[in-house]
Length: 471
Image (tube, rainbow, N blue to C red; front, side):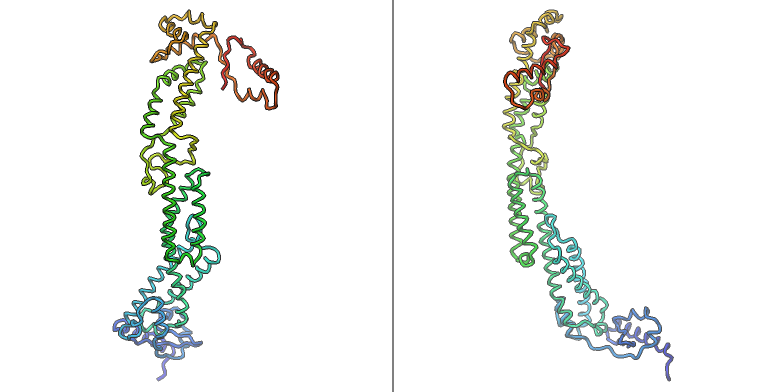
């Protein structure tokens, strides 16, 4: 009896489905192949496509046939490619286990390829520079894409019956051996880069922390150029000893930096002993006196402010060692960055200089005060001061006695009142230099210009009562 073509198609698809289900349950092959016009076939590997094909194509099938034998040569080459034992395919009794082993290996390889592609897409960065770029990067990406495409094409072959319909040849699998080797090399390369990245990031920050003229910056730049060139060379970067060589060199640079940084830190930060010296200087009687005298309008308070600001910038931080810089290239306690805090002199020199400067400033202030108190214009004011104790104390200082200790704030108020008959006139150094000019002058010309400048500044004032202060 001749079957209706539609019924025959449905029966055949049903038979194939039953055979396929039976194979899954009994682990026994029994698939059929449906031959379509144009050499197309629907087999166990493409059974899912049946529902997506137009009905007219299925109705036009030519015949059914038995599946071909396993493509043993291709599968053995696949096992070699994936690193599997050939016996899983050679031995008919192990083939079902072999299929599962192939699928597990395919999934592992796909995961590795995808991860490597993600790393490669960023160029594998070191020192913010791509190690794979240009034509090299393009070739790598094409090779990985082709390998990934082959692996994805193996996913449908989940049974022995489906493997009988494998169309890939042994030559096609063999052609992917370089791709798998490249995949392994890139994994090792990415591991090397990830191992070196913390060190290069540390050294990059270290360069930025140091002053621009520090020789360490040039040393690191030279090493960076040399190692980037080595790592971009496929043959050199595959050398087993490269990792150890580069890592040892970078660790040496890190140690060198830490030693240099500790030395700079020692020059820029007060030790415990130096901090005590700063405290003594901050509490010196001369400084206490000057803080009171600064309220006298004729004295240059800006000098005291500048002195105290410079003294305040001397920062204590002691006990820093190389071990403290293991994780970060800056001091974990004070955050010292040499490039932001240039130190033309060390803190020890600065302390000595400031101690001398305080003595000089104090002597200058007291001398200027005595000179103004001795001015005949203020004699009557001092004699008329109604507080006898303060009047006597001021006269004593005027006549060469030391300042009272402690010096009361009322003392400065009294002196200001006594000196009220005198006028302070601030002269800008820049204005004076502008008036003199930069051209060569004779002594007479120089004196004439200074006198002209003073005459302009003193207009409307009594020169005898004016006290000039350069600012």
